[in-house]
Amino acid sequence: MNADFARQLLDKHGSPLFAYDLEVVKQRAQTLHAALPEGSRLYYSFKANPLPAIASELRAHGVRAEITSDGELAAAKHAGFTDGIVFGGPGKSERLIATMLENGVTHFSCESFTDATRLSQMAVKAGVQITVMLRVNPQQAPDARLAMSGVESQFGFDEALLLAEGAAERLKLPNLTLNGVHVYFGTQVASVEALAKNTQCALDTAVRVANAVGFECDVINAGGGFPWPYASEATGSDLAGLREALEAVWRSSPLFGKAQLCFESGRYLCAGSGTLLTTVLDVKKAGSKTFVVLDTGIHHLGGMSGLGRIPRSAITLLNLTAQREGEMVADVVGPLCSPLDSLARGQKMPPVEVGDVLAVPNVGAYGLTASLLGFLSHATPVEAAYRGSEVIETWSFQCWHNPNRAV
Ligand SMILES: Cc1ncc(COP(=O)(O)O)c(C=O)c1O
Image (tube, rainbow, N blue to C red; front, side, top):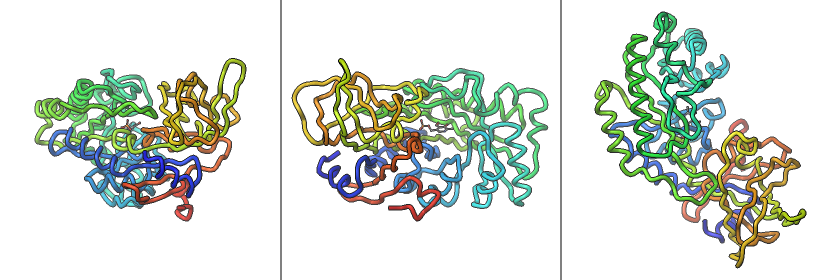
């Protein structure tokens, strides 16, 4: 991003800071829509980044809301989503379901027999009718870097349970209409072939399950997992040929012409829009090692990878202050009192000095929201959404639960 603009943002709001380019969000929405079969519906997975400016940009380009919490509901409403919201995720509490129903959310992705029963009971209590997609964990293993279905996981109904005798009876529940199937295989699906194969598998699963349980499959949410680099400068994924591949799969399904085909995406839509701006606080030696200490760390970025939950890939640190000759090898760490607070080990980069402003690209998804914000109680970085050189909106993260915290 432009160095002068970055400096202006830091002068006004302090360092570190997340900046999101809304023009990039718009382009990704347009590109992904164009890569899906005609008539497909695209949902935005708020978990990737609930910032209202990003969500409302996506809404303006025909993307719907897929949410998993009351905070995401607040963000979706703030972003102007009023209908067509789908609520999903494991372990839905009565309180959460009641909140959704009170707010007019009546379409759910359902994860288990217990989940279905609880949804039905809460719908009866609220006096509303709900529609439910069964989230299914198919027996087939997926092509995904972080697989969430096709493996033994906490997500969805094990397909075998739905194909077994008695499932249909257990799912005949008051105020609840089964109308679809949801399959989410996992994230960072690396190729067009894998995306097409996963979609084929989702469609086949939907047909098997709808036949076995005995309902009309009006909606098939085939997931997605559309990939994007994380915190590195690598260019985004090439979706060339995806539309043709998905069209072929879709047209050969018995559901074609009868059901609404849907996809959901988080990172593809917003990862590329985000840059983390950070300042070098210290450069120090320890034996043979050099440590670059930043004012950001796993409490703002990659908190889940800090705990070893996600394979860590190389991070890019672009120096916006100076382009210096030469190369240094350093461990890049944050200000937390924990050796886990490491953004890169043995990172080769042009030399940096105290006070330099560095930029980490491609952090618009699973950046701040997927980090250990509470750990060591540092202030939360401001998030700024911009278009060109105009700041459209600035936020502090806690504002979902307390709108007065908007900055
Ligand atoms: C059910 C479900 N849908 C959508 C997503 C969004 O994935 P991505 O951001 O990779 O598109 C996730 C991510 O974990 C998910 O669990």
